[in-house]
Image 1: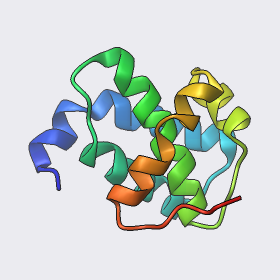
Image 2: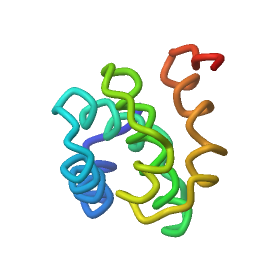
Image 3: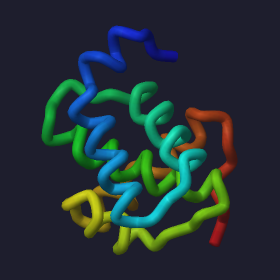
Length: 102
């Protein structure tokens, strides 16, 4: 769980998630899930925050039923596909969801 202070401290990253959501034409539900998952997994370094934000956006889109490819999300968030691939399942599981097995 995260606090209101976490939201304030990470406003820049939440805006990046919103901008990525715009580029991917995701709805508010996917963006909300992504923001919540990001705030629940905020890493210490900015370099890691970029990857966690992207993986959170990918996972949020899955939960909301607005699937986008890892490559599209990676491009929208300016990270490598591998950055998303390495993190999204753990983020999804920690949020209480079971990742798809495809």
